[in-house]
Image 1 (spheres, rainbow, N blue to C red):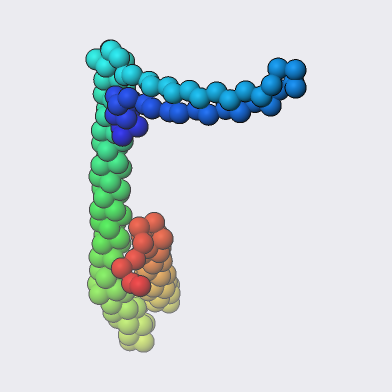
Image 2 (cartoon, rainbow, N blue to C red; image 1 turned 180 degrees about the horizontal axis):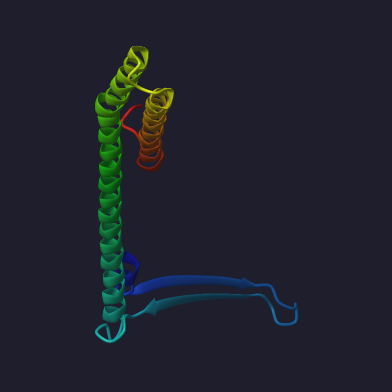
Length: 157
């Protein structure tokens, strides 16, 4: 915009030229002055200034939109991370202890002769699957954390 506004002010330039010509004609020195007058400012310079101002405003709006989109993306990624963390904590505090308790009860029932070996193996398999599920959920939490740090940066120096 400053360049467009500068076109509204007169432009002065000086020119000094030395020409070494054929000895028959002699050398020549010329001095010139040029003044560019910004005539018809309303129809020539003002529309250019307005166009530059609208371009600057558009760039500002695009920058604000990009910031808002980045903030929304960060909020969504943080919400996903929190959800995955809650799922991991729920699995650790609820699912695994219940599967372990069931496996212990089935083993005790088998020792007492009231349960079959397939019941014990099913309970132990459910416990193993619960632990594998916990590892998957932990991987989701770690993956989210790494993606957030790599995408948006970290507060740590």
